[in-house]
Length: 134
Image (tube, rainbow, N blue to C red; front, side):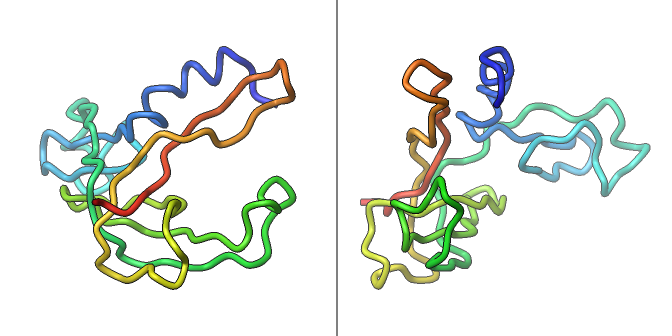
């Protein structure tokens, strides 16, 4: 079970879709990295925080019929790889859409939603999911 302190430390990256951009080659990564795997030594010290675009389109998706126990009430549900407007591929759950209406290329946007909680008095964790763009 994660601590409250850890949950707060993870806030910027998880809640804001924060990645990193190499100041040498301009490549954007999500999640963020400390060094650029493309530039290697030339990119050391040049990685900057980067707020990944929240809008994009479904690049690929899958319908989940068998799920871990914590997601039993959600199934079936959809997960997708979304290509954001800045070209980053981000994985996330698709919500607020009928499963049979999901298509490749469907415009979506990231929204903040409750993921789970550690009991009634525990840490509540939020994260991003994707909804159809209206």
